[in-house]
Length: 408
Image 1 (cartoon, rainbow, N blue to C red):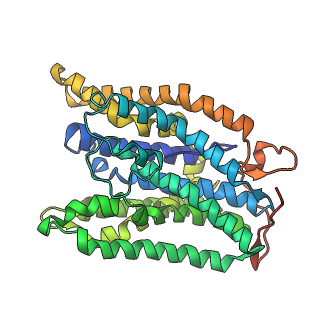
Image 2: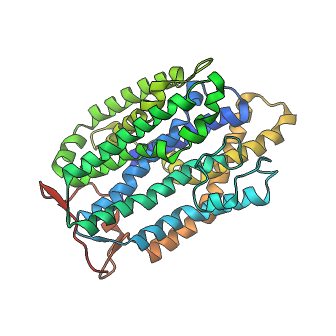
Image 3: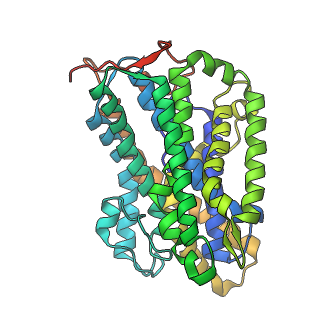
């Protein structure tokens, strides 16, 4: 659920982050507060907000790393991991501490063992209904942050150049592997018959092995931008068409998910389980490309409130569920209407997210930017712009992407 601090900011990416957290809120409000689709179909498909966060992370982190590597910079694992830890851990540890020290206030449920949270393995075979269960997606993101730079360092270690074709085939192979695994597991956990669906969330929905491929469309965008700059210019030059395709694909998939993701009396749909997650991620990837394309409305239109909501989205994600629970319990005796209840709970979740962002996340982000401003080794300190999001990509060799490794 993290968002890279980039300069200049892209309003379209902020809009997508804001949409992602709103989708998650709508879904969780249905599941943990109202018990009904308060926001209509958005409540039903709102769980895909996490998938949108995955795609955004795939692009943002992939682009940070590849934009430097393709310029001949030497990736520093120490710097990268320190930057990631300062970005994600402070907020996470504050909320985690609250769950373990004030369990009744935070929902009264038993959390998994603390070591599983500290090692970011809480999502593996996680049973629904435990305390702080929504940290499952953060665990998968942290696993992605660990693995992606290691893959790049491996390429640096075993060869000074990497064929673009090999990179694309590897990415496609991983996508196919994710789809194949979900299809196989569906036969065991997809149907209501015999109570098999009780294993769906622990073995498929929460599983790193079944959800990792949703980062890959975002990584593919970063590869396209940095490996094929001329093609990237042509693609982003058709922002209106890309936006239209993304909106159409997302709308169709939302309609299919609302009807066929879970079928009462049957179980989870085979196609939606096997292919749906990957297709949703690809549809969201089209929207990410549109957000980076100067000709699209998503790029050019600044939606009021999207930027702060995007900035607070990580903090909101961590805190909104316990705050919604607390507010629901406190508001029950008042007998308020559903609209008033939604407004109060939404406002409280915004306030809680802002407080965590302002007093925990922001100070540590300043420390990060002061002491670890780049992911790469530098002979002399380089400006932050060297690793920030840019409009242009450097020219690359046609046959291969050359990774030049400098001695640390």
